[in-house]
Length: 475
Image (cartoon, rainbow, N blue to C red; front, side, top):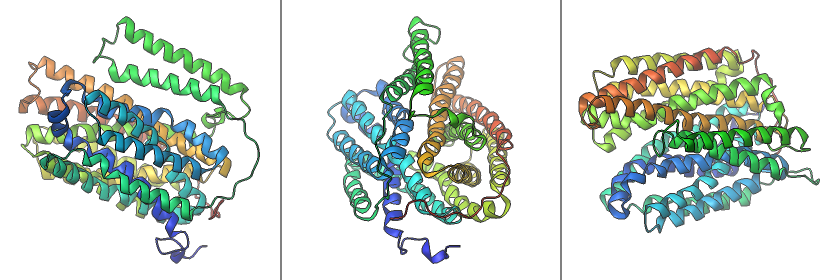
């Protein structure tokens, strides 16, 4: 077994780990820094009615290309895909920093999302490539800690730049981080690839991207830009479904399909993908509504509400660093079941206590929720990586992360419909404390139902204790 000293920032593979952490930080900070700066952005460029697309378009473009990037990583290598993602994210950040109105900012956020869609799966796949199962237990703690730190840095920077009337720097600050991550990766990570010709499944990639774009667009805009039962809505969903069927037919004949159908027949991959689909939904229920709930019901400032939410991602890396020792001893399934049980218990707690708003109570409960997420997300991802070969690891890991992103997008639309329906029935005054408590309580109740489903899915994860392996590709 590899000595503990071989894992860490000062080890031989430390520079690669550092580059992965910096790249992860790009996406982690960006996921929280924008929310607190929205008032400043709207005051400068206008477009209040369109600002939700700053989040939706980023989530959309990040999600739809994840399977494509993951397959290209299995064919061409992880390094070129990650370098491409960092470069695109850099370009998108610069463009966002010079945006002249809300439509241009939304378009440039889409570019950022295209880069983020490559960065997120590649960072975890590279960690899976160069570290053994036992080592990944510790390494995932390093990577998860980036999210914990970013959960504090993001809202703080967003609030600071907003107060200084310098919102453009929430994007421009990515420039030195992108350059550092690109340099570290290019200099230190050297893959040992099997050189052979590949047939890239362009038809499958195009069909999958178009199908998912239409389906997510229908979910995100249904009940907002058009009625759910309108001809537009039916047309968008219908076209997406047709393209998805065509995609399946193409994949059955492709020599190197972008999303191999075996993904859905592997018990570990299929069960953890479904688990992470629900996990993404529970996560978005809290990240999207906790700040609004605390501001509207408990009178919290945007910064304080953001920091209360940050306790969720502080608990996550704590559990991630502990989970490795547990699943190496007891197996993935018991740890994942324990994690989902924590998420369910705290989800019920938030739903029940929502009538009595308290910043400190919510922060404490969310910290425990973060522990539950850490005991669920990390073991499920490592479980998938440990059961597939190098040439399948990109697709398998990407499928899990893609499922989580899709869960966020789908549930965000559903929860939005629930919240808006309650606000409408209570007179339409969204900022009234009683309305906020009622609408948020319904959202938290829905999140608790999802948490119960996630707990049930945890029992479908196959049993077994991971065995020792060795890195597939070392630098």
